Image (cartoon, rainbow, N blue to C red; front, side, top):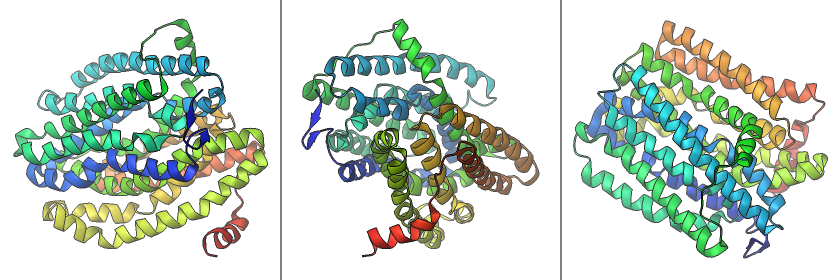
Length: 436
């Protein structure tokens, strides 16, 4: 039986929120700490190339993860009292990810043949893809499920710090640009290996790969969660892929830097809290939907306030930050960020309704349908507006897509007779819980 230091179920929500925040920061440490240095060395064009392949590989990484961070994580608490079943489940999920990685590598190699200038950038392309291997073996989904993320922090700090230092030591010219995604990938792989070693030594989890019918059936049964996560990611990132087809890599670099600044708010603030709340909300919603919804709404005001303050602060200082750290060559990126700075507020509501609420209640088909409709609209908007307005078309498309997604989720809840919103109570909850 897997037990944490604070009794069955591991550490509390607060501890896991902090640990998730630290881990998210470590995963984002390369962009935050090294991007200014790398951007100055390689310039806007190569910066755009790296970001293009980063987004492209992101889709394959999501394929490898297959939504297990949601579907498998919510299953783990139900198996904590059955040690044998929990270990079988662990092996099935990890084996599934390895199989998906092999398939992803094959498809990715075909994609590279279809990209006109991929031969010129093959080092960047394959160095970037290596990160998918790290996430294929990464057991974060399991550790999150048993609520022991705190114990993985140091296992991530050591390799990530080592490879971060190598960025500053070894990248000296535009010809070294491939080293940047390579070091990111290697840091992820080493962190994953150390995490697996921890699970083996501390919790006696089996380290083997088994391809069987049960694994294939599980992949089929979880396909909707995967498609939802893939399509949902497509909504925010498709702009970079389409932008590269209409404008130069330099413009892609400008847009992607502004987009990454927006992601800093999401990755370092909203994602850690949402991931820590997910298994707790899942248990509560499935046992008592009324109380689960109440708990969910109690989380919304604080999240929105924190995100608003962080986004607003970054909005004011973004021109100075970009000019100081990246140089005047990237200064237009501050304008991009300032136009999309409020998007994280809409995105967190979309995540709460889609993943924390509807997915936890088993409405996988509804979430998939909504995200597919939103992604079709996003692709259409990007193709039309980018072809007409270039960089500004990508900005408009990103904003409209998030608003449309929020509208569709709200309509879905209403059609299912689900009351997600308790807006009238938010003010009272905020005052009562956070401003005593």
